[in-house]
Length: 119
Image 1 (cartoon, helix red, strand yellow):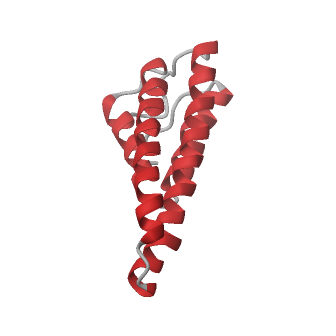
Image 2 (cartoon, rainbow, N blue to C red):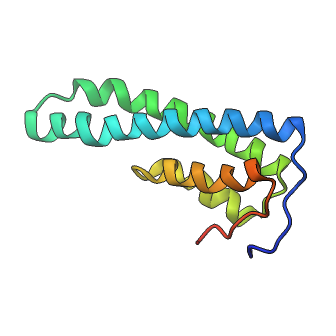
Image 3 (cartoon, rainbow, N blue to C red):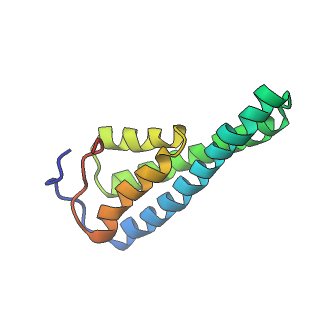
């Protein structure tokens, strides 16, 4: 998708979907960082799998919510399928959900066209 592709008009439904998406992107991003930077080192270097057993399922459950809110925002904003998939995958890579959140919501907040998902 090019930077010249128009976006859906900012309606109250899109604004509400964007807020839900932003919150969930941050929650999932922080949860993934805790899992990868704290829980997994404790499991593999400290021999204590307890935190992975707690944080892992919680992150998985929250990621399902992230997918739902991403789909909601994507459908309401009329994203192409590739963009929707790339933003959905952002919740699986540490730090990327934060980058994707900023990239996705900045044009929506500004009422500007969407940038391409790759740059």
